[in-house]
Length: 356
Image (cartoon, rainbow, N blue to C red; front, side):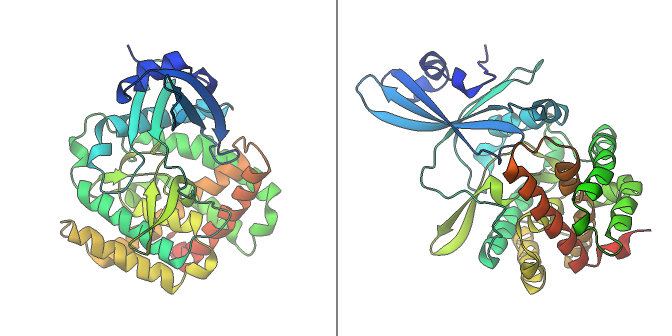
């Protein structure tokens, strides 16, 4: 029987022993839980679990379960929790992208209550979207995305459990439950960002959303992270060069790889990187997927898909600013930050020209 919890305080010594106890040479006699990611983990609850063993030795793990806010119902509606558990149960050991090792992963299908226990990477520095990534981190994120997408290019269709971005029910839900209801409140609350014809551009995106989405995420499917941004990464160095460790695989799905890199640039990179740095990262991404065996995918098509994905990723700042429970002041500031970056990225690639 799968063991799941609703609040991370329920990760007791008994639960710890039943789920991860077999990984240790002695029983776990005590657990202490401390919450993490205030204002960051909008869609789930994350905590550090401090384990104490019979000998007095200690260790730590990361414990993840459903969100404490109404966002948990939204997450369930979007299959976020099921997606991440499926990733750790089925794909994690094949991932070319460094990830925290999964120690236990289980979900109750009827309720989507879940428990995910991960290794604690300790001193690794998690990204902060309020601080722009560097040019080196931008390239590292694009390179790692290329490795992920190239590895699973054309293979996603063989995974029976995988949900796909190209799904009419999901597309309509995103448009009708998030994008359209959030747009006017977003304009009302954050009007200073809707200069020039930006409001008109976003209204046209909502009107054409299905057609835009079908092309942006169409083509040969691969595995996409789906929420690829610095808040969901540890920013590290490897051999003296910037690198990333990706976590939070709640939006794992089958779709087009350009979605991840468009999402990253529009979410995590300031306008100063939306010029030559963005172009260099795009070229690196394309070179990387070719190195991993992808054929028949030109650089021009890669750029084209990237531009379309910049259009549809506008849903994220609109949803955060206009509809979601933002949790605290950081959530509001996060909304402002990614709204500004999303407009900058969209305009840097002349994406308006793609709209009817």
